[in-house]
Length: 138
Image 1 (tube, rainbow, N blue to C red):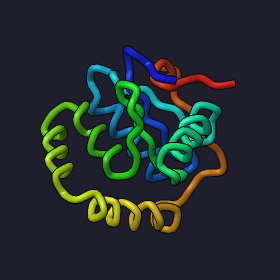
Image 2: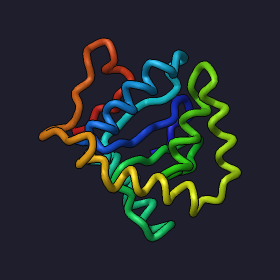
Image 3: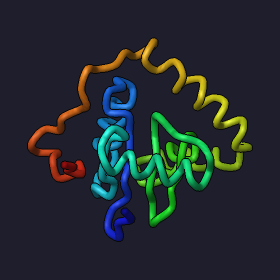
C-alpha cells in the first residue's frame, strides 16, 4: 500500500474531530503532499490489520503512512505536523517526550472525541476541488 509520491493519513471518517483535523491539514499542507483515506475503507482496514499484526494494537482514530512506515497515535499526529506550512513542523520537538506520556494525552482525547465533538452517520465526502487528495475505494 506504500506510495512513493504522497503520504497517507488514515482517519476515522465518522468522527467530527478527525474530519476537522483533515480540514486543518488540507489548509496547511500547501504542497498537497498528504493524501487521505478513511479507516472505514478497504485501505484503512488493511492499514489497521498491518498494525495489529506488527504492534498488536488496532488503532481506531489515526494512522499515518509515511515513506512505507506506519505511525499511530501521537507519533502520527506529530509526523503529520512536519509536513505543514508555517510553524507547525516545530511540533515534532514533542517526539522527544516519552511515547507513553504523549500517547496518554492522545488516548484521553481520542477516547472522548465522540462525546466532546460528536460523530456523523457517514464518512466525510470531499468537495470536487479536494477529491484528488482523497483515495477512492471500491
